[in-house]
Every structure is written in C-alpha cells, then in structure tokens.
Length: 160
Image (spheres, helix red, strand yellow):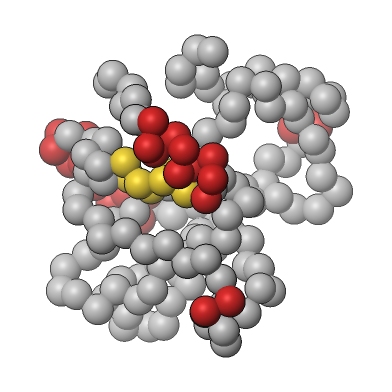
C-alpha cells in the first residue's frame, strides 16, 4: 500500500486544529480487508474487550479507552467541535490529545471503525504506574524509560 500523502491544507489543519480528514485513504479492497479484520476481532474478542453501548443498540460500540471527565454535552458551544460526513475509505487523523468521540448510529446496517495508533519516529518510552490503554504489561522490563520504541509491539510502518 502506498502511503497517502496529505496536502498542505490537511497538514496545516492538523497543526492548527489537531484534526484533519483525508478522503479515500483506503481503496475498496482495503475497506473489504478492514471489514474482515473487524469481523474476526468481534467474533473472538480478547480479554479486555467490552461493549460500551446499550443492549439492542444497532451500532454496538466494542472497546472503551480513556473516559475524560470534560462534560462536552452540557455546553457544546464552549468547545471547538469538528464533524465530518464520512464515506467508506475516508479517514480522520487526530492528535492523541484531541478529545474524540462519535454520536449514536441511527442508520440501518453496521458501522465499522478501524482505529490505528501511530507513533512518531522520535517517540520515547515513558512507563506509567497505572494501567494504560491498551495495557502493555511488562513492557517497562523490556524497554527502559526514555528508550526509543524499538520493540515488536511497535512495528515500523513508514521509515523516517
């Protein structure tokens, strides 16, 4: 797969806003592969899987990471909220510090989301005393604090 190169506008939006939407990042074959991967994960959930939606919700949300306590719904006008109408193959990229979420899915059929996390080449290991999401167990025994992320859990996708 050739990496999608964002244009200057997307780069500027990401730098300014912490979020950018890139269209048609995945071609139809890649969308089909993502659908198959998501279905396989849902068919055999791991030990940390959980459903974070109401029973019977047609857009069941599986997995739940950080739940911030900022009450955005109480005063949405106080926040810089960005929304994108997405089609299969579109992707949203955002900085990890960006609070993000999605409203309910009131449409027939299924909503499939593939979430990938990328690290920059200069990222260094910063062990935490608390359970991280996802948890990395004894990673601190293998990577000392301050080390680069040279570990099988963090494969290089695009060389620097």
